[in-house]
View 1 (cartoon, protein in one colour):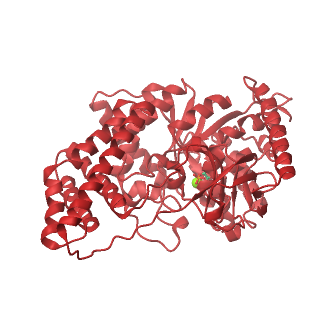
View 2: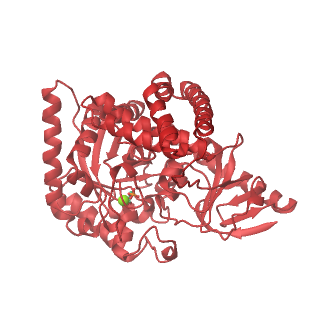
Length: 538
Ligand code: PEP
Ligand code: MG
C-alpha cells in the first residue's frame, strides 16, 4: 500500500483502477529512405488502418450524436481516398526519397493551403479536414496512439498535469477521479473537474510509475489522500466514508423544487455554470434556476479550426431550448492565458494571464467576435439569452462592444432573421472594473463577479502557479470589500449583481453574500443544492 497526499479540488471518494495518462508527443523528422516501394507499402497499410478507425468513429458518432455529426468521418474517409492526395504522397516518397510521415505532412499542408485559399466557404473549411486526416495517418505511421482513455471501465486518471483542452476532450463517463502530480486548485482544469462532479487531487506527491497502471486505488477528496493498492481495512474505511457521503448527497435531493429563500424571506437566484451542451443535463438535474455562466470558450478548445456561426448557433440553440425559458447567460469567448488554441495563433507571452486574452482578442479581431454574437442572437429566439463580456476594465470597451452588438442586430434584421431581446452585462473580474463599477453600472444591465480572476489580479497571485496556492486567499478582506463595493454600485444604478466565480459555492460565505445584497449566485451544478441549503439555513 502506498499513501500519497495532494490538494483536493472536489470532495468525494472514488475507488477504482488507475489509468496512467501520458501525453503522446511526437516530433516529426525528415529522413531519407532507401527503399521507396517499402515506404509506399507502409503508407498504404497506414491508410487502411485510418479507414478502419474512421469507420468506427462514424458508427460511434452516429449512435451518440446523430447522422449530421457522423458525416464528418465519412467525408474524412472520402478525402483519404482522394487520388491527387495519395499521388502527391507517393510522388514525394518515390522522387524525393522522403519518409512517409514527412511526405504525408507536406502533402497535408500543401492541400490545406490550397483549400484555405478558395473562395467557397465550404471548400475553405475542408482545409482543417485534410490536416486532420494527415495527422491521423502520421500518428498511425509513427505508432503514436490517440490521446484519450483506452479502457472499457471507468478509471482513476493519473497524470502529470492536464490542460483544459485535454480535459474537455475526455470521455467523462470513463473517469471516476483525477489525480495529478502538478496543477493548481484554481485552474480551469480544476474547475472542469468540479463541474464534472468527480473527485480530484492536484499537486500529489506520487511517482508516475508504469507499474501503477491497473492497480486498485482510492481517491479521498476530503483528506486529499491517494492510496495505491489499499489494504483491506483501509479499503473498508473508504467504502464506508463513500456511502456516508452519498447518503448526505441524497438528503440534499429533498431540497429540489424548494425556494432559495432565507428564513426572513430574502430570496436569491441560484444558477449553474457550464462549459458545454453536455453539462445541461447536470444543470437540469441540479434544479438550478438558470445558467449564470456558460464558458463559451470551451466550444473553441480541442479543435483544429474556428467553430463556424452555424456550429455555434446549433450549440446555443440547444442549450437555450433545453433550459425552456430559464435564463442562460453566455459569456463571450475568454480565450488566452491557460486556455490556448493553436489556430488563434496567439503570440508567445511572458505573462499570459495579464496578456492578450478574452475581450481584448475579441475587440482586436471583430470578425471572430461578430461570428459568436450573430450565433448567440440567432439562438436567442429559442429561449431567454443574456450575454456577458469577460475581463472588462473600462467604459470605452463596453461602448465599443455595444456598437458591435448594434451592428450585428442591424445585419440580422436586414437579413430577416428574428431574435429576442438579450440582456447585456459584464464580468467584474479585474480590480479596475470593481473600482469603477459606479461608472460601468450606467452602461450595462447586470454585473457578474468573477472571483477567480478578481482574486488573482487583486492579490497579484497567478491562479495557475501551484507554488502560490497557499497564498491564493479568496477570503482576503480586499476581495470581500471589492465585492461589496460592486454590489452597492450596481444597486445604485438599479442593476442586479451576481457572483459566478468559484467563491459563490463557498457556503461559509453564503450569509456574507446575502448580507451584502448579492442577487444571484452561479455555481457548478454539483453545488447548487448545498448552496440552497446554506441560503435556507440563514
Ligand atoms: C472568474 O474569473 O471568476 C470566472 C468565473 O471566469 P474564469 O474562471 O473562467 O476565468
Ligand atoms: Mg475569469
